[in-house]
Length: 283
Image (cartoon, rainbow, N blue to C red):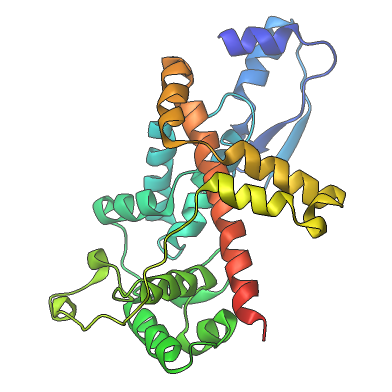
């Protein structure tokens, strides 16, 4: 009700709510409806949605993880479980993007949700891919070992896997690991494989990397480059500082901060994958 009172006290017309036309149920905007009643108003602007009940639920989740009073982690996890059952053909990453949780959490939810088994799933890019990517990972590993300079996009096409999966396979091979994570291996796959010889690489401290980047004129002498440097500087936090930040967040805001932090981490990971892919694609 605190959120409802905040909406009711705002000046001007409330934003339109979204209603599922076939059932006339409010998909997005229940708090705005209550706020309008508190104002003594009898009308509110509406946008109608014509899809089926499953699509309406997905839209409701999308809207409520991006604005208004955000869903808690428990609510988003429960929403993911329902979407897994109504859309078993959707990939873990697709459902994760809807519910604003990690793909790993979606995979865990899928294992316990009793969802219909499918042989292929639709990714966020609309492409259909095998539900079991183990053979694709194996094929990608063989391609990368035989052709270390092969661009990731070409590996994706030949192995039938996503760009993110191909990037993970390359990182595993560079570390001398199996292309398939332990959690995805069957009993036959658990036979030890000879590691690929690699040279251990010690990552420099973030402060040293930042100092090198700040001296690069191609970054510091243009507006976008300076913005990137500021973002990197803000995110280069020492491990012990995260504990301090966690202690500062009040208990009733932890879910909200965790949600935002997860979304930021996901975007940074996408950015890292994009840079790695471009590096591999260069001749």
